Length: 312
Image (cartoon, rainbow, N blue to C red):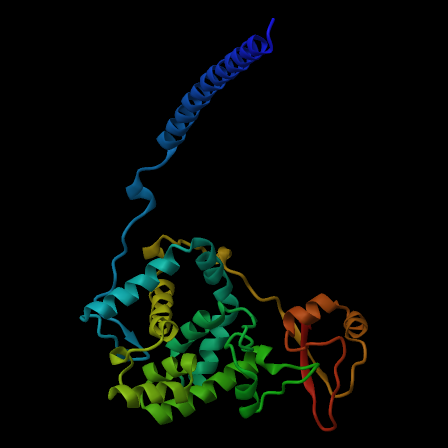
């Protein structure tokens, strides 16, 4: 038998095997596809009607920030507010935790803002800044109020290797209040104060001068500051009536602070974990309730003292 003949037979055998394989995998694919369609149809049939899972919210027709009117009659203003409401209301996991966490901090924050002559709505600025957590930003801002190091030192917060009072709830809240007062003396309205907290007083003042308008809602600003006030307003609307947005928390759902005792310290502590244990507590509790302590030791300058809180 010639080589050409043998080669032809070989080619026919290979082609037959390829065709048989294609037919086999096609039949398997059709079967899998049929099963997949069946499974999808079964899953889809279990889903609730779209109207039960996604719904539109009633947006307030009138709104104010710190007693100052928000011009919702203007189309772009209404759209910007609505955007932030939907973005936050439908971020369910984040909002649930925010609501639960708020009970630990907002009552004391409300008291301090009131004592310092700051409108109550500024508590929602803290929520927009940090989610009521002692977080840090890439720009170097720290704490609930996201205070920069230069600003903190300007308002007499201690910022060192072992102490950073930007993480101190009461002291940072007092610092933010001082900033708001100073900015209000400069701009004359609280809306501008809030906007300047985001982009800086110098930057906001420059935009006012360039665009010949003083009102925040009339200015063309960077995307972050353009959204900033509306994020604050969205939190105000949702927090004041969470049930309208589908959040029905009971009293027992909210987080609570443990009863704390205060220990005044006026001497160096060389080993904070050991010191905490001697107080009948732990280093974990020490850091949890005193996040302003940034190291494993505490150096106390002559004539200075600190108040450390631990669970009773």
